[in-house]
Image 1 (cartoon, helix red, strand yellow):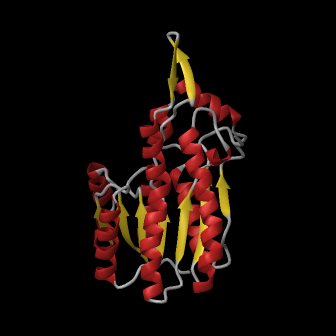
Image 2 (cartoon, rainbow, N blue to C red; image 1 turned 45 degrees about the horizontal axis):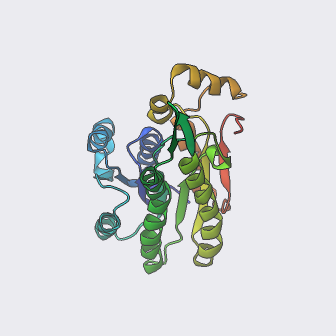
Length: 253
């Protein structure tokens, strides 16, 4: 698939990895709909890509709200007549032990925090894919869905909700690839390792970050542009389907 002139929706499109993917798509001539609930970061995205702003649409919505999802997808589809690519990238990280003891009291992982993570990292992928694939089928579009996962899908200390959501995303990639290939729609995934974005930097102190870096054979964090390059590869390789690429510098959980 050639990226030029393709109509693309990306969720979490103004975050660390998302903004880099959006920029790559715009530089390659795509028409991009960037969805993120952070209005400020969407504004920064528009400013940074001012030269390509005519090909960039932004929607500041909560990706856990199905009505807003339907409205955003319909709006982009009605303006451009088709949707070629969906990149499910929205995610939150909420580290929390299943149970812990502090001050002699047992604390349990709050169900509200579990639900919020699963709704953002997993259910939003389901809802967006369902709506976008409907548009692909209406126009007989030989489209592509890319799910951004994480190497935490193998399981990681203190990440019950995050790790399980990413493991489920990997499973959906395989499931949807098998289901949608009948319509000429490819589904693939990317599983980043420790990447230099606000998410890990806001959730860990410098000692913790350095410990993870020391565990990485490449002895550094990945760059968002390296994840964007993997997206570019999957788009261009029409035989890549049903697999999740690990871009982790050799790190294993």
